[in-house]
Length: 507
Image (cartoon, rainbow, N blue to C red):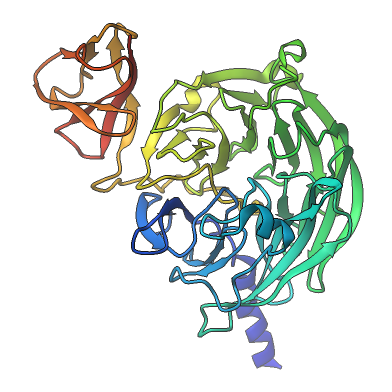
């Protein structure tokens, strides 16, 4: 009896804290490697403070993205919507052909770029097996008379197999019969019992959330709840995201067309209540003929909601008595190409207390909200803050909300160290802009020597000059064709890898 009790006491803390670092490794990348596979990258907050690092991966990411770490923050496996890869970046045994079917054969055909979708996959630990994991995924179905139908499936990974590296034991198993689900808007949060999970998914052309429960007996439909907003197939579906607050008490859904919807959430019963609709944009300014791909994310302190809509970023202060008065404009897209437009799109809160944002297309940039717990522009939003080793294709991993019951929702001691090829971007003053080709560059006061570089939007260096003890430097590109150019200043006195940049227009 003593040995049994001791075993329980030793095991319980492990299980209770097993997933607090479940989101410590992010994987992305979207470029074919001539030698085979894809060029990818990892952001490992456990070992290299989130600094992007180049890796070669067997399959890339066309937006759908999920990963999971063990209790120590080490990567176990990741998923791109159609293949499961283990920690060694190999496709798991039986881990291929996820979401296979008529739609894939007709419209997609190849898993090398993953599977389309923005927030349509999740990885959740099995409450009944400490070595088991459910992958929840939305599968596109093909019906000639029905547009964009989806089926909710699960795939199961057993980490006991393949020498502890994991293998897929079940795949493509439907868990709900109705096919009319929204693209995107797939999220989860732990039950109040700290073991089971609540999973939500809204219906399309309807005004309800489907609520599912994942427990030791598997995933089951629980109940339906009112969204208080009719969600339209042509505008709402795939155009936004939904996120639980870090304290687990609220839920936010946002897209440009339908605006921001905030609800209270009861983790004991999985109930949604106290709906509030907030107009991020004035209702009469919404362009009904335009879809701006959008996303939503919370600050770590669960006070602020961030809403991005391709061209604009807003912050909403939920502590205002009238939340509508808490809408604050943060910034607009600055026009940078890297090499494609780096508009403001998908957001994800990192375990380092920052919010990362990716453009929708295959650019090399990530934007960062450095201090999301601060009000207004004190949140320190930096566009094109991080240069990735290769193209990203508009993807960030979709995690359930971890650390809900922890005092610390994130770890502010994770400070990026930045390696040889990764630089953190700050804005530099360049004027006039646009110009006929002659620009004045104001060198930051804290730096007096470094290298000025002018490159085109394809990354080709056109001008490079050394700067020594100068306040203003002139750049003359009048002989080059009209268009957009990047002006960058790399200081010599680097402690952290910081550079200053501005995109200019030569007319």
